[in-house]
Length: 364
Length: 248
Image 1: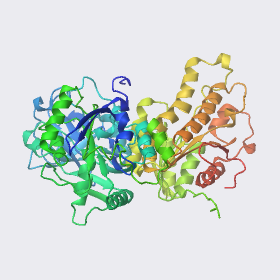
Image 2 (image 1 turned 180 degrees about the vertical axis):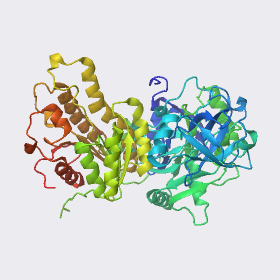
Image 3 (image 1 turned 30 degrees about the vertical axis):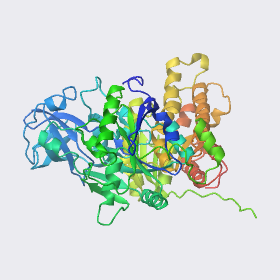
Image 4 (image 1 turned 90 degrees about the horizontal axis):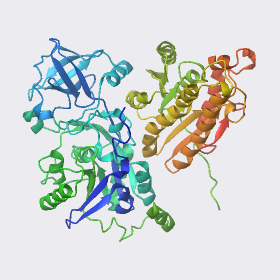
């Protein structure tokens, strides 16, 4: 069991604020979020819990493999990526290629067996598998055999609890929706008292690296989401009132923007998105986001191009590197909003919040 | 004119529930009661056979029930329980922390209680419910709805000799209920401590072997009363209630 001191307490994380219109940067803390956002802002979170999606096993021929689940199943078919011998301690790009597998082949994970259903044309590492059991029995086996997906920049095994947000429910994510991790209930309760509305959706955050350049270039793979009717209504009300819609994490951006681009518009319910955003993408729903610290070249950084000019993003990335912001999934956060002028309360929004309540929120 | 205030009852239909200690006694009866009212139920207990039998019984009566074998007192099992439950029935709306242990029986005077036994009783009866609630109530708070029921005992308020370890765990659990309630009052999550009264269960027989079973309540009747309490809009969150005397 990793001790609590290994990972930092949730709201100790630093927060780099980028005002995308002016390019202004501010060094703040995640605990400052309630005073940085404005009453009336709608903040949408991803409530997916993180699966123990890494399974270590052997092929029918006895060759060692690691199978990383790439998302929740469609029916009983789980998308997954195969890795060769070794584990997260080796950098993903240095990992041995997995042995070739063929449909029908059995993969053994020590008490849990999967059958390869199909192998993708894009990459022989991308497969669909079907496990030898379903329902409770499958979930029990997955939680007994699986470990959280992790990468070589950590020195120790990550415990399952350390890759969960403070509001996680259904286990859909194969990597933690990490922008939400530093948000504890002191901050979330403070945001509500501030008059920030919280809403949620479930988005199956996928793998961020596969070790196969062809497959990596195709990331993120299509990801499943499920948007509750209440959230669709909350977004519609916010847009109608001219209030801002802010996403916690790129997964929430992809779910909302992906859903809004479906032929029927933004609807509640489950869906799949393959949306890749960049500087040419005009967001239809989301005005800003809270995200990790990203570097040029990463797909998350490209997505930020839809929310801030390239020069401002480059300056922010340099600032973050110079000031020692932690870039990994247990690290620091960035808030990218058009401007803080409204958010800082300089133009108090005319909401039904008593001044007393705002005053109290400011003390927290 | 002042508008009369009224509460909104909790409709159990299409909710998701998790009940610990569900393989026998009150937990089993509560799971059956919740399932009969239309809730999708996940049942947790340590012993596979009676648990799976209890779940199968509920399913054969037309309810939705899943069995998860786990030890509430084991820190490693908390996230797996919560996540598997949500995977099976969706985000949990009702959490019933019912599992508990007396510690070694026959019950002992405090001076004869081993420190390790006290620790184990607190792990199962107090720390386990805290951990499970901590992992599940965050999602309830985000969604603005949820109910957590902690099963208490009259031993939490009365000082019975030899009941020390169990009593203090339940007294602390009652207070845990109250603290949760004040902290999550604005988030729309309710917390109740419910004292079921003396029941004809294996736990009661372990504690008081010579009690007359005829003088003890049937767990199924008590579960029906608790279901009534759960559905009521009142009393307010944080309350400690007695199942005794409630019309089922």
